[in-house]
Length: 437
Image (cartoon, rainbow, N blue to C red; front, side, top):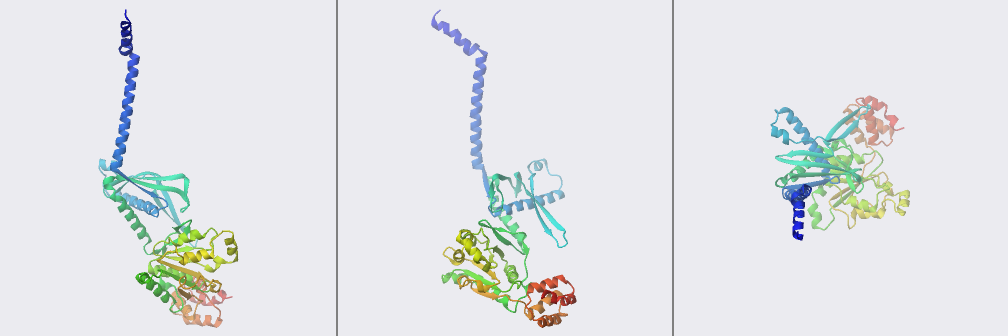
């Protein structure tokens, strides 16, 4: 038999008659086909996602992060309230209805004078995936929390919110962000927000406070009226400043003895003008020149910047620390207030109990444009405060007692006395001598 005749039966047996080879070849072909199909499916899904799906990411460092979480919690409450009033939804409605099954709790509480605590609990979407609906658009929201990175501005783990929807519904992102901002503003309506510095950013301190009425602050005649008039004039003069090339900034120095109402009138002015307050402690050891400059150039809109007890920031101990590179320097403060890099459209309040300790360079015009003495209570202040708490009866008697004692009395001392004797003017009169001893 020739060589060819010898090989043909062998090849035939190997290729056609051998079931093991046929099965292996078939599996290889099937595997290759599945691999190609899988790659095609992944490419098709990626292409589809690229053209049909759009994403939005919100980092926890962004101001809108908390707004959006609170807004989502509010929407969830509204949906539950509406669902309880409606009949059973259709099958399709049950399949596609927005769902949030993972929550995180945010607790706020208030401790009362009698020791009791009133707490409120807010359920916000927790880490994980949530299906939400805005108008007619369905959105997949994913909240992710890092196990390694920290968000120093919040002193919490770094988080992100990722929103996904159809490309044709991308407009809902702007709508939802604007609605979240409006919802946050509504919660703060009629209130004053306090900010403190946390790292390089301003962060809200505590809950928004009810606006303080300007009438509730009783100062010497004309003081608060002059302050309010000057601020209103400044706010109406932006074009005047711009036309003359003058930096659009205004600085105020309120000085006087402790407890005379310096901080109170600032809070009342903020409430009157619908402003918030950013409080900065210059004596903070971790505050540096660079951080100070950054904070002063990034004050939230419509906010007063308050530097309390500015005289204590540069005592001998602080100056000694500054020599070793710890804390803000005096030249750093001056440059932040009106240097080349200082921001405009800014209103700065400084307070001090000892104006004589302030360096003239700090309170020169351009850094301090308006000075106001907030002194101990005058007889007229004493009378007005007494009437505010008790009415006109016994007011003259109380004023005569104060004049007879001839001892300086602060408005804080008077307020403490009147609060202790709520509804008891005679008790306040009888106890007046105890606050001046």
